[in-house]
Length: 189
Figure 1 (spheres, rainbow, N blue to C red):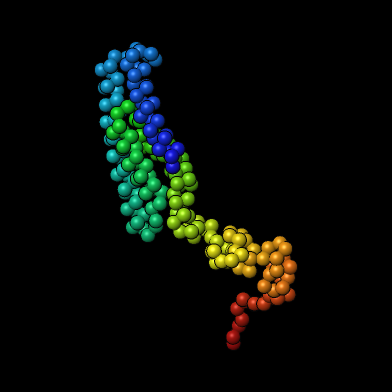
Figure 2 (tube, rainbow, N blue to C red):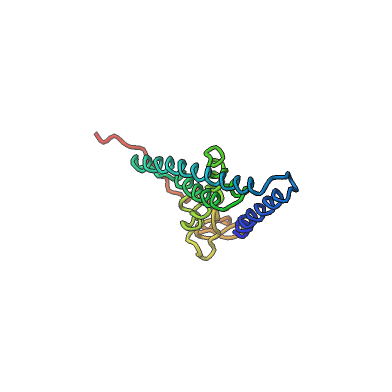
């Protein structure tokens, strides 16, 4: 989390350095009025793009909701478009470039996939205990004495060197103590 905040704070710093370098002629001699016009023009064009993409995303959300589907990708797109609008409102060329990356669909899709993988999924797993993604606790009840966690030996807590509930030394599955259940449907005529 701190890395993300540091990155977000570095973007305006890069912006200020770029604007100073352009205004002083270090990179290329550009009149200050042209720099100001360029910053304002990129912000206006970007905000118009965000507005158009926002309307299209809203229509996709409404269509998915009308068919009973969950609009997860569209909601993430909406959040990225809100962030793009904030970047366009921040004066500078670097922030406008980042806003453009978030606003254009071809560049927004890989960013959406990364956000889904590294932000949304870990958050949902933390809130649901892994039930949303299938990363459930399978080692008995949590905090049970001897429960080992995901993929652990089971409620008895017996692992290598321990004794399981069936008296075996490994605490694992014993086919001799298992009950055979036949799930085939039988004809009742």
